[in-house]
Length: 452
Image (tube, rainbow, N blue to C red):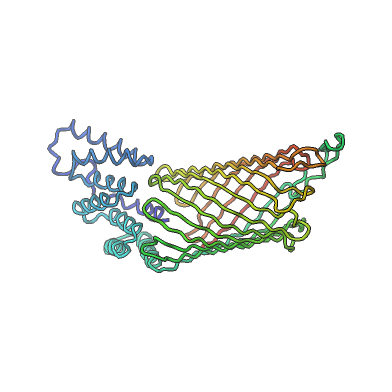
């Protein structure tokens, strides 16, 4: 959000920064100037491609050759800020302002840096100095909005609410293998049964997400983050597949330097066609490490209890879930790459061979998210799920093993600062060594998202 705020000021350029050399270097021979220009362009390219460590070293070398060059100082400060070397960044930004006190872009970047450090009064002061200049109306409003956000951040409480309205399509709402397809019952001498006709349906979904944060310590070191989620999907023709979901989570967390640790406690409840179906409760721990300004590594563990209602109670189970994720943002308009792996070991609470629930499941996900402009974003992803059940099924005389391959493609358009629309299409291929669980599914959704 802050990055998007800063990007809205590119129209202000660098407010009179010398292009490559300062006035004190005007007598330098043209060959030296050309070399300085070439080295600057190389360093700037490293910065633009998210290679901040290399950019920092390159601009540091340029500073030794041109210490009074405002543009070199500016990008050295930007590289230092990206690497969380705040002291060097602040010093370099201050040098820029000594060379060019009217540089609004520098004051905004400095305000952003102070904001991220939790130095809200200093951030306020830089924004006030920017507002004292002659700014375009849209830019001025963005600065005012940024100040309001700082005021909100200074409060111990933070609130965010999101509403999502979804129109959806499902090509195989009952997850059937399709008429004309047969599957064999190995436990009965290879007896073949036919599948049912695939059924498509349309649905309307509503989602409410409320997030609350409470600062328990200085500068957000200890926080209590809570979330409530409510979801409801109504199908046009197949109401037996209507789903309602309620979930609540609270997670004390501690952040220090590049590390963040959290201890989430979560409960949720699922209703199918208006009837009680499943309750979950879980507790766990997670650790997130900032590898660099644009790379994050996280790991988590969760212990989950699953309690089914009615005749499904034989499926009650306990799960140990382990996960690890990696995220890398590349470039000014970032290309975000994310990978996630999770492993679940689920043990059935009751010994009921007729409905086995004990299993191991491995899921690997890859996602790509590309910012095209201030309003447009594209997303693509793939996931691969491998589920192996531990009990042999008498009907098929084997242990069930499922493989799901899913591909997703979507786009998002920002209507204004509080609302956006998105669309996504997915194709899933369910493979199994037991016929009834082998089918394909196509889903499409159109979403309107409102945040306040």
